[in-house]
Amino acid sequence: MLIGIDVGGTFTDGVLFDHQQSQIMKTVKVPTRSQQLQSSLLEVLDNLLSGRDRAGIQRIVLSTTLVTNLLATKAGEPPALILIPGPGLPFSYLQIFPRTFIVKGAIDFRGRETEKLERQEIEAIVEEIRASGLRKIAVVGKFSNRNPHHEQTIRDIIGEKYPQAEVGIGSELAGQLNYLRRIATSYYSLLTRERWAGFAHDIEKAIQERGLAKVPLDILKADGGTMPLQHALQYPCETILSGPAASTMGAAAVTGQAATAVVLDIGGTTTDISLLLDGQPLYASRGARINENFTHIKAISTRSLPLGGDSPVCYKPDRGIYIDPVRRGPAACFGGDNATITDIFNCKYELSVGEAEKSRQSLQRLQAQANLDAAALLEAVENMVMVQLLSAMENIFSEWENEPAYRVWEVVHNRKFEVKRIIGIGAAAGAIVPVLAARMKADSFIHALAPIANALGAAVARPTLAFNLHIDTEKGYYFTDHDGIGGTIRKGAGLQMEDAQKLAGEVMQQLAQQRGLAEYTGEAEFTREEQFNMIRGWDRTGKIFELGMQIKPGFIKEFEEGSL
Figure 1: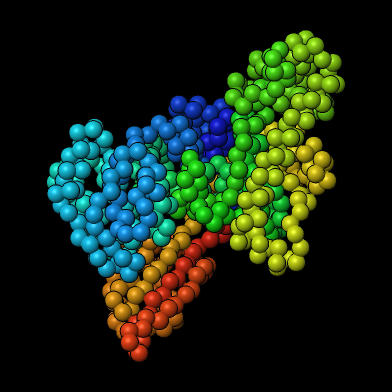
Figure 2: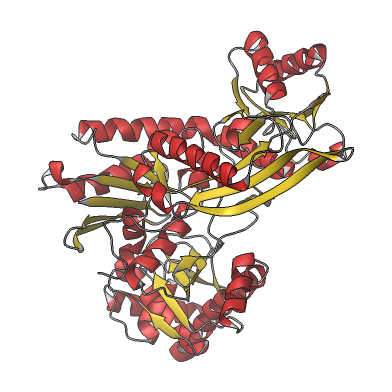
């Protein structure tokens, strides 16, 4: 049996799924205690395990908002940045974070040292950082993914002069090209790593105490795939946006049949919007965006807006009726004190959600404040909700139109994409999505499992892995953008693309073996295959190969899409 747990902003959901029978054995939903995510998560886990033979549990996958919350609230301890940009970009362009120090030294795009580091300069900067009280330092060189020597040297100097500091280097935290994204990824990774390590330790200890020490424990990533909890210790930012990823995978799981549809996950606090094209999530080609900075974190293309089923509907004389983006508790029909969007739709469409009479009472109080009749008030609030949702969808479609996969889909199908189906996920989706779909003249789909689909999506998502390989036969070495893996190869122009592909396959095997993904390597695919000749004088002296390879997101082999 499989366990999936999704820690949302309002509720923490869990499912116990018997993959042999393709049957949900148990579901749990508890309020999320935002300051105690571990306790919410473990409460769900204990409920799922109650009365069950724990020997039958084969996998646990968690989706958590911990890193998202840390970055949204800027609660983590900020690191200092030591950058080695070399020539090119103006230094002012690189000052995207405070406490940024730029040092001399340069590595070119082929990994050759073109300017040496100055030890005195680095020691003075390390002393300044130590005196300021900052305990984290990220070191990022422009082409350190081709040669990490400068980063490693600075790390060694910090170790000598400031051994109490936590140091992260760009070649290990963010190995892809694009310097600004590498800086952002390294910065955010170091900012969140300590808090994530504490969370992971507590969860791992709790799992062991429950007799599940040998059960694989995975974390859902922003791309809709999973990775082992231990691996997430080095790359905590991979888990940002795991909530929208869980809803997208959950939507694909409950619909199957290579669905093409917009996915709306309407929770208590927020609404997340994503897109399925022939059953595949649409990805953000520029990576996840954190606080307006693009990163190298592969992520599903999503948009979140502060509008959910528990969003309170309020009145002020100077504003009239309005929707407050800050959640104040559950809907009145579920015991809350305020009229919410759920209560409004409950009354307008007689949905009989929760205690419908309490929804009517909250509406009456709002009527008295606003001096409006019920019909006008209900219509006004519904229009506000629809305007916000339609505006958000219009904005994200303008982004999606620039995504390569979106354009390819339109070329393959020889037509422009139109919203013909909306899949509703989340507790409030059943009330809101059918109304929105009717306005857009589209079909709506609300599965019976929609309220806990995020947890199901986590439970059945399979591990993913992607890397890029750079080979330079003139220099006789290769590098990857993962874990500093690289090595030497024979020099000269004799290496062929088939040889490069074989090397990439070996790297994939090595990485997959380390992360327990060996059974999926047969499904690995190339995403990029390029080669360039190196010419000196009139002779070809070598080649450069650039290859990308991935085990793409999908479902574990034990789960059949749409089999629920």
